[in-house]
Length: 256
Image (cartoon, rainbow, N blue to C red; front, top):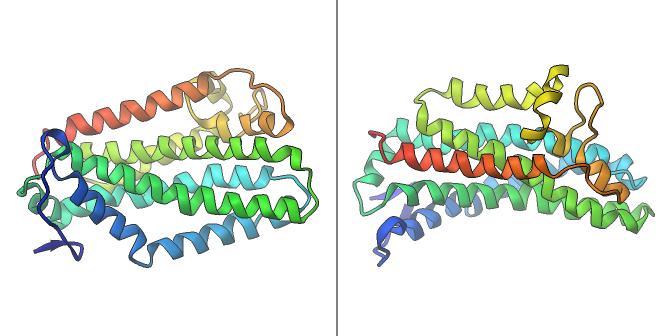
């Protein structure tokens, strides 16, 4: 029997890594040996690069970064929630756990596969094309280092919502909370009072606060100015670690 069409083969891993290689191969198969990869690439090139073509040619990638910071997390929430819930509801997870597979390896394989998949299709490829658009449009090359650094902020912001959705998928059997809670947090940034939480959330990495009190961090990077604080960056990274830890803790106790 196989999972999603990929035969699992024996391996010699032990401890918490038992089954990681097989599960990672299965998850990567779902990204890179199906239509998903080119559909994702085409989708983000159209939405991000074509949609921001004019501003990119003028050497102003603000629209590109803002769109990536808003749209990519929505896609990560919707797609990644099915990574666990889909297998739970179909019974695949129960079958997989009957094999020599440790549950942390099951979850880690999904984090690596989905994280790397979105990194390549949603950040690196569109970001590389955006750099070429800036150069072809005669934009200043001096903004490219700041633009590349801004792509790192876009990806960190995406990881926040990706790990949150996966953690919620281990805590809830329903799709409503798993999708609704991350989306609520994502759009909470438009509320004026949310500026009080800005230093502890990923919002300011890619979007301006509602009252304009704190510009998006990518604006500082593009202009070559120092960041006013690194607290949101550190806080976002810690949130990602926390969500991953909660998911590991919960999945070891979940009945499938």
